[in-house]
Image (cartoon, rainbow, N blue to C red; front, side, top):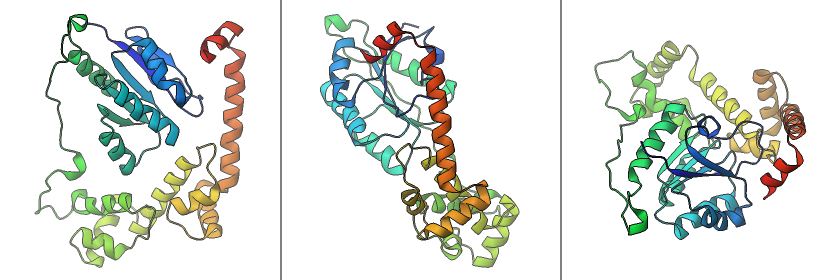
Length: 285
């Protein structure tokens, strides 16, 4: 298969982990840049890539607008967006900004390989002579959580799947077991019994665990305030959120965040110790 010129626009806030395409640099033609959002379009023009990968951990408005502007200025270059912070609203925004594909981390190598091979097939054979981009049909499998369910299966997890979707959708708002049961077309007693049987925990326990997982993810953001995280995961009482977090995680949200920041600083120090002066200039340029 022919090789494509790939530009990886690395807009992550912190660089503790290897970048998105690190394992593919040897066999793919990958150029990685870490520009300020204002310089993204200019840098794309300088490299003239055939494929663009935008790598985010916690995207903000300037970095997202940089990607959107890139699509406006270079409409024929397909863009793949990969992000650690994910939401339904962000995925919809990316779709409307006309990205080719959208992934949230962790992303498997198989997914990246499949995406790359598909995009390579899009590249015209004779671009210099005015060749047009190929048109291909993309595979769009139906998501597992919306596949048809067997109405006669009264004991499988599929019966309570709508409740899982309800929790995901309403995580920042008030969640009640009665509403979850209605989503599954069950009465409260049957729903409670079915959920406990299939997930080995009560529905209320599941909701708290999901909120704690989301809180831990949000606290990774260097500028995230504990109060904001509290409200973002559906709590209105900071002291109650703190007690719940400590009970499930073993430490308070503020201590957990400070521990993450300390680890991040140590990793950055170690990484910088291996970068010589010439490498630093290349990164900055």
